[in-house]
Image (cartoon, rainbow, N blue to C red; front, top):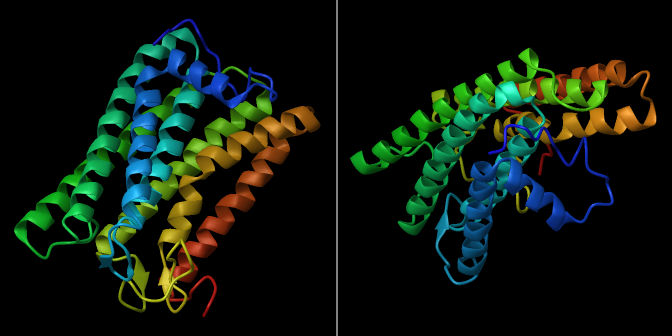
Amino acid sequence: MSAALPLNPVSAVPATHPAWAWLRLLHRVNPVLSLAGWLNVLLCLVALLLLPLDSRVVTGAPVWLKPLKFTISVAAYTWTLGWLLADLPAQAQRAVQRISWGVAVCMVVEIGCIFLQAARGTTSHYNSATAFDGLVFGLMGVFILLNTLLTGAALYLVWRYRPHGPAGYVWGVRLGLLVFLVGSVLGGTMIGLNRHTVGAPDGGPGLPGLGWSTRAGDLRIAHFLGMHALQALPLLGWGLSRRVPTRAVLFTGLGTLLYAALVAYLFFSAMQGRPLLPA
C-alpha cells in the first residue's frame, strides 16, 4: 500500500471516471481490501451458478441465496472501506494497512463459514444443532467481534487525522463510520437472542429476495440500514459539498441525524415484533 497516495475516487476522481479506472485505483492504494472484494465477487458468481442447480431450502429460502447476498455485502464493505481509508494522510497509512489485513481476514473467515454451512445444507447463523455447527457459529462470532473492533480503530483514525476532501465529505466519512459501527453493534442483539425475528420463528414469510419477515419484527432491517451508512453518508457529504459547499457540513449532520433516527425506529419497531411491511 502506498502511504503517499491519499486518493479516493469519491473525493478526488471525476465522477465521469470509468468504473474500471476506479477499481484500478483502489487496487493501487489498498490491494488487501481490493483483493478481498474481488474474492467475494468470484464467490458471488459461484453462488449465482449454484442457485438454480441446487434445490435445497434452508429456513424457507434457497440454500445459496444467503451466500449470494453476503458476498455482495462483503464486497461493498471491503471496497468502500478501502476507498475511505485511502483518503487518510501518510502518517496514518501504517495503521490503515494493519486494519485492512485484519478486516480482510475477518471477512474471508465469515464468508468461508457461510459457504461451508450452505454446502452442508444448513444455516450458518444462530445454529448450535450440533457441536460442529456451534463451533462454526462461535468462530464467526469471534471474527465479527474482531471486525467490529477494527472498525472502531478505523473510526478513531478518521477522527484523529483529517481525510482528504471537502469538509462535507470528511464529515460524511466520519459519521458514516460511526453509524456503521452502531449498525454492527445492533447485530450483536441478534446473536444475544439467537435469532433475527422477534415474535415468530426465523424462516417465515418474507419480502421477495430480501427475506425480511412480513409477519413479525426483523432485526436485520435496522442492521442492514446501519451497515450501509458506510456508503450513504460519505456520498451524501460528497454530493452536498458540490451542491451547497458553504452548508455541506450542516446538512450532512442533519442528514445523519435523520438516518440514525430511522435506524433507531426500525430497531425498536422490530423489537416490538412489528414487521416493516405486513403481509
